[in-house]
Image 1 (tube, one colour):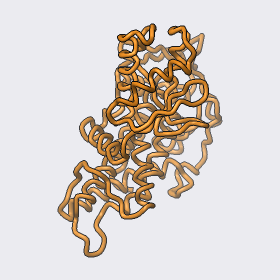
Image 2 (image 1 turned 180 degrees about the horizontal axis):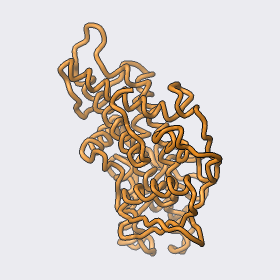
Image 3 (image 1 turned 30 degrees about the vertical axis):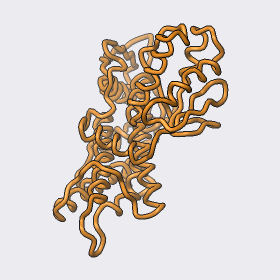
Image 4 (image 1 turned 180 degrees about the vertical axis):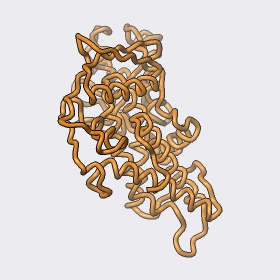
Length: 332
């Protein structure tokens, strides 16, 4: 079950509780699920019970217990634990099932994976000062808003509603891609660093890791083709515990991509997407050596499933870089 599917499942639990008179509340248009915070557990968490409590005229813990009972009967959910004032912490079925669902969705939707109608019909006006970083951030925000069905319009003048800390100097000497990253990767309230560090090809450079991860994925795909096999969605059978952890990290990062895109659009924060791409890159790079057969091994279903997972990560990296206005190289 993907986060999008889980969100729909939780929403359906709310709707059924209302229909059967357990809750008297307006059903929200959507439910947000995220990674569990401090004190949480499971695969995902939602604060929907806290959001509904006042309208329902019930304590959040009581609302959470009502929803918990319904969620426990939903297909694909293994356990639900209520923590804190009323957070629902949800554990899904086996990780293999989640991996298959996520990879299947990414392969079906391609670069549109994570796009939604969260901002459908909405026009977001971005009023910015005449300043380089503000222009670059606004340009990226417009593209990200479009992925959620909205339309961004950029205006200049007061009152300004998007004013990132200006760059201390002209980023143009870094080149187009590094300049974009230097201005978009830091949070808007942080001063960007306009240094040659963004050009260095080493692990300490986040931009390099993201672009290198994409190039490595493409290289693995080309090599798999030379070996005569392609990607097929299926359970990712790992060789050992380390491989299992690497695959789990990739699936978790990919499953979180739709939520990240929605958050980046609603909060006008392309830095969230940039940091997420670093997370995806750091998850996929250790996994890539497991994709191709070793020694006398013959390509198997496991290799094809690993290749599909790697391809999915490459798709997310390429799509995210494109939204930031940065090239995703085939070779690096």
